[in-house]
Image 1 (spheres, rainbow, N blue to C red):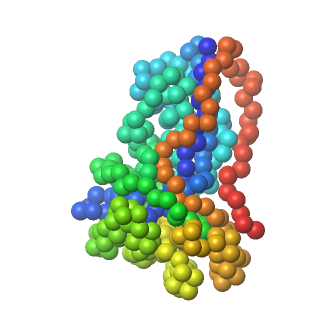
Image 2 (image 1 turned 120 degrees about the horizontal axis):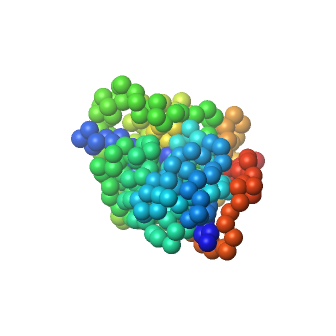
Length: 320
């Protein structure tokens, strides 16, 4: 008997806030409506795990899930339908790992709690908190901080990618990182207070102010040369604020969807900032898995059915 599940998990536009609290690392998730999507098909009769080249972390997450569930003698086939670009600060690896964990469990007729997925993900690498629903305050290195901050509605993001990438493992291994985070803890704490209050009250302006403050504070660690110009646009165009990938390249202009036309905003920002960037229009959503399919079949998977390189392009929509 072959069992299969297909799951989507959102990526992120960086973080709303990131830094340290009393020396403990944390971030506030910024999940967006761009998704990683994969399926896991498990087979009791074949212990091998088959996966597309380049998705070793997702395969490792499947193996860890099977072991956690006491099914480590079962095999699996991982198929990837959508993925996110790496090195941008879009939680691409975490989204793949999270989708793999949830899909493997569902295919086995079981369920996982977000905390179990977080444990698997953190054992593989530093991880975003997008395995949890809503917006999460989360320690991306050890999981020591973990708090549900609620949900948000009506928050749009014009995501701006200047190109390039940042290796997360190398970034988190920087010798100066702990001291640099400590130096900005006061500003980071103020940013977190604003975002937490904004989420609690449904006040998008407070969220924007907190995200902007965290973006400014992070200039000491991973500067974005366009930040000052983007802040000017926030004022002139009536936007809410800016958020950034604190260990990646992307930046986001935050706006209230009921007040600002996203397409017109993209056109204006492109005119002011220039064409040397990729622009993507999206919305802030909640974390957690979206189940696409759960199915069962009578015939076991044949390895000859596994096509190599059959991976779709990232689900990013450019506005021109």
